[in-house]
Length: 226
Image (cartoon, rainbow, N blue to C red; front, top):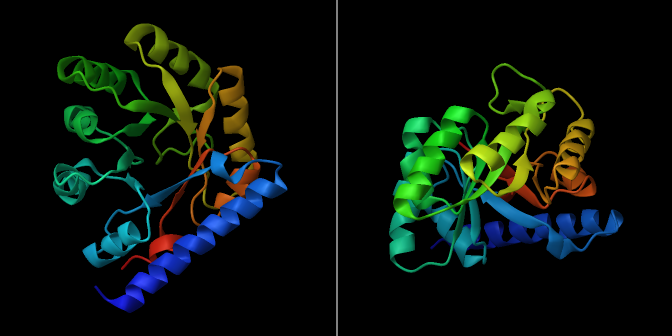
């Protein structure tokens, strides 16, 4: 493996972890309360291998098929990994997603809840579940509307038996992220939900200050995608 890439990836990861720790300290939190999720979509294999060599074991993927191709062989070889689906999930891919991912962060509608519950029942495998909230109410983005989140969370628990572990959001790119992170934290608190997946390369430090328990970082770790 290219030593330059190994060093570059290791240094980038160490920098992100240091920034997370500093943001957590500034917010009066333990750095260990924030997990780093490396967003590995469309990354070349040499950079994935370098990130694994650096010790990173939690990865976020946007597409089920791409994730299966990348991670299934490594899983079968015994590599210890936590895989998170952080992109929109089609109901017809629920079976494959439930089989592969340890965490699905993008539950946002009844049809998908039904498909995931059915896949879990048939496979005996139950990924941890996050509800995605569309805090900016953007038409092009997945996620349940903030004003409908309480009712949807209640339905997911009551009708489908999900123990909702966390909430996830992606703030609008052209707005300050802080108010969106604060809104997500407020929804989580009133629903008794402890985990918050929020913050990406441009705003993960802000997310930590607002209570993120996991941040999804791609370009700040791997470099800009081609």
